Amino acid sequence: MNFTDYKSVSVITYKNTPCIQIKNANAEALLSLFGGHLLSFTPTSVNENILWLSEEAIFDEKTAIRGGVPICWPWFANLRSGDDIPAHGFVRSQAWQLIAIEEKSDAAEITETTLTLQPETLSLYNTSAHLTVRLVVTISKDCKISLISSNTGNTPISITQALHSYFNVKDITTAQIDGVTSNYYDKVVDTHGNTPSLPYKFESETDRIHVAEVDTSTNSQTVTIRSHNNFDINIGQSGHDSIIVWNPYIDKSKSMKDMADNGYETMLCIEAGNTEGTIVDAHSSVEISQWFSAKTR
Ligand SMILES: O=P(O)(O)OC[C@H]1O[C@@H](O)[C@H](O)[C@@H](O)[C@@H]1O
Image (tube, rainbow, N blue to C red; front, side, top):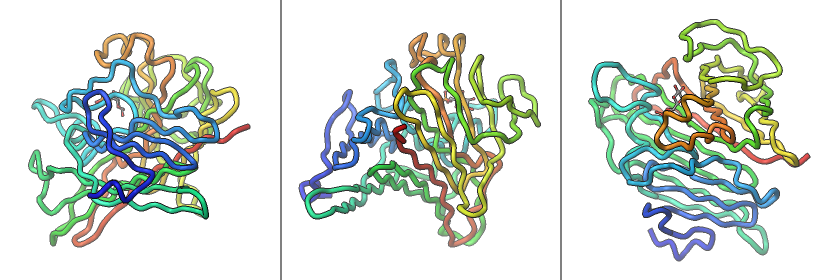
């Protein structure tokens, strides 16, 4: 691709990793080509990165990056136990290619930049050769991420997946989320059918797969993170069957080599997922999306 044709896009190296930097009138963002992984999103309105990136994240182009928005595809969590198949699929630890850029502008400046990417390698771990995926990332006042899975074959293919977004919070012990009230599977204690206590706060390790609560008029779910002094983080998602809420808290944070001991204090994952599985019909596509922005108070 000829990047010089696009004023809001440049190729840079960040921590030895090839990245795309986006700067337009509404936001700045950094996306790693390793993993097709958005690392930061800084809306001009608040001038703060609303995504969390671990200080100890490993940038070796082999290890999945801790923070930002990892792409979990074509499976979420563990496909099966007892072998060395990676958790959360294989594309978060693959090189991706940028295949298209689109810019929108008003009279004077570029206001929206859209990147389309695809992994360089597919069909690993016995995944069907008919299954492909594209990632579309739009940077404007909101950041929107869509993952589009397509089946070029004649038989349906089942996948699980997630947009595993890590958000910045000021302090997890006082942070609150609104918009997640449904029953959940608690991965910490392995129990189903739990009901969250509201307001939704964080006092210990939290690893929950909630049933999606989709507003039928918009076909989407809205979640708000209340933690920052002058703005909230608004999150929307669609095409999901689950919303995953994860914070490792003290002990797990200490045990993770790519997270500082106190890393859990300033992060919160709100993930759009298809953990039950979604069927990509023959010659069809499915799309899961998440979008987020900072809403000043
Ligand atoms: O360490 P990973 O593979 O990036 O996963 C991080 C977390 O991802 C979450 O989605 C899972 O619910 C957690 O169980 C998991 O610990």
